[in-house]
Image (cartoon, rainbow, N blue to C red; front, top):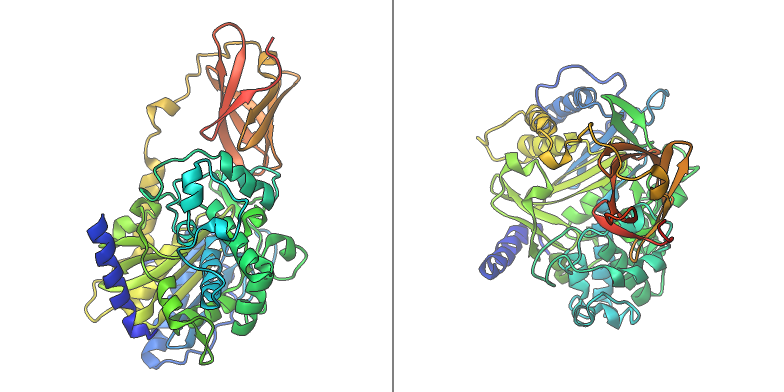
Length: 520
């Protein structure tokens, strides 16, 4: 559809839903790869982009991200496509515009676009039951199983909680994960709430495969990446390993940037496994801003492009702390997109966050303006600062008030980090385990997530859960122990004694695992 009609689409859908319910940045980055593409705008654009370039280079150091890459597009022109900082700390490996990062959940819009293409072909219907394409698929409630539609699995309203432990720590295959969804208990009534959900996008990928007769990977490669010229984009981590010019993930440890372990999203690939560069994502943004066309040719019909970016459900504004500052009048979810307003304009956006990697896409369709940010450090909210700075400097109306987004988001982050812990989390150092350490040794099972194995090595308890969680336990208070996961940070395990000298269960990340071996 014509880009000028996007705001009307938002307003129409919003009325239906409502009725139903950077930059004072300091020190420059030590490395800023010089590969800025020519600016095709006027001299004013060139000056604005040059200033943005300098400010981003400075911000990379201020925000303590190992590396970062940015592309900005407007009116089918690439204004900036550049890398800053390092692919890996401690090595002379500068980021450039072709460096590949995990794009995380910005993959979701690609999966929903694949379904839009299949709707065009008559192979999928948005409101058809999922079991029409996946007859063996089940949820815990037979009625919800029967009623769950393709639109439901794309809009985070299926009634399930997060359930990410199914893939973040286990060794389960994609097929086993989808089978185990039947054991996940609902967190709210079907279509009566909204909780962000990755597993349902894995289901969407399975629908793509069943309806198209191709793997999800092949569909994206052949129907999206190839026509758009996204030749450096790779569908999953298992295909990235050994490739050149790939960023390594990092996280902050005691105020220092450290390498961390790549977390594979491959078991739920359609939710967020794609790796790409800002050069390739500039092509993706130009495609979206041209209403689903590339070189004048439509890849998706006007009607289904419209459906793809239309609001579907009210989302939770606490999803992004930056919204405390931008204060949108509405915050909604479409088919793989967050939708909000900013300075009176409709914004289409999404982030991606994988261990040690951050991404963000932000578009103002009516201005034909887009920005994409990739970083190789965990949850770098500089991405939001860059998006809003680009919107202010290149997309804002005359007289729009400006703010120092980087400074304000840094201050917001500092306030969040300084909040005192909740009383229940304050450890009581004067306690001890209620039982001898050997009493905790056992295998504990959850019907959805599998087994946690507790062993005793000398005088130290050790926990292992799948391939993702492995570490020693240190006593915190009473029967709660602090786990130091190898390459994954820390977390608590709380054991549940029965009062008669036995341990019955343990709790990990809010989930109960019941003891299998006989207690002694």
